[in-house]
Picture (cartoon, rainbow over the protein chains, first blue to last red):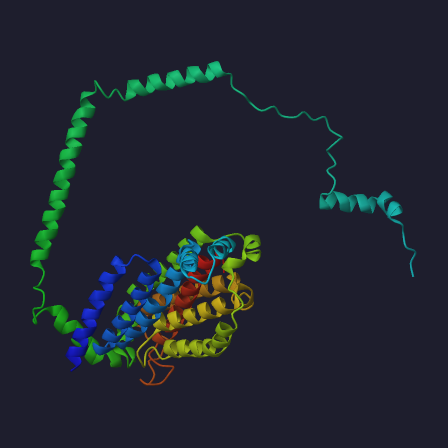
Length: 104
Length: 316
């Protein structure tokens, strides 16, 4: 039973690792990377090493992704995505999206 | 009551002149001495051209690339020796690898003796219950000291690259400070104290339960990150500014080095150290591991938060 769960999680891990590099949206790849770290933490617990699990959950899933988010915000990738979505939605006007991106 | 002197009367006195001279408001030499302004030295363009031509002539004479046989020989020798050196190093490494014990062999010394000693004598020798902490902070304390130094150097490098001046930090553009998000602030008010206490628990219980300095420090650092992303830099600077950061970071590293040096010195000379092992299971036990966990935790927490703050706004 335990081995089956481990096998499933390992397959998920490989899929995550491939998806990170093939995702075109940078925000999506960071979020997939977060899920990779969370699954990795669960695998560490199943392999009976809780020390590593705590560190993986805190550093891999928490701080690394926060640093990635801050960097994406700083190079204005996230804002561009939001404004692009704003233009694609039927309710919002394209001018408003552009103004937002210029303000922020 | 004494009579109040007017400013003009006071300026005539010698005491006023003396204080003026002492505080350097008036230079006694300016206007009283003959002075001449310095002229900027300028070379004539002919001299500059001559010097450049001389330089090129000398350069061609020394590095006569086309007709220099020694240089040609040296270049051939250099290329051949580089290839030879690479080959020799590769061969030496491959020969070394072939002498290593086989991977996965159950009779390897690394599998047997070291792990056995950690498991059997770990609690008796270091006084820890969580053997992993005893391993990384006691048997391999020097490695962990190197890791802590790496953290210190990493955050120093980030500071060198991304730090802005204090005046610029106080007048930040609005997109770098968080929006006044009520939900986030309310959640942070509840979660941040819990995170801090949990991180401190993980650090202090490092020798009893899973965890230790690195993971506990990361938890405290993420608590600080949550606080600063909810309330902004103004509020967190009230209790965690650059001076506090510098004090904590440098003190933790220095104390870690001192404790480690003392421990090695007493251990190598067979002396008894002042850190008692205590009864395994108590909070204050396991000799120096308790203190080193604290120092490592402070160091990691500061590093993690400083990374976030420097990435976000370029200053703590």
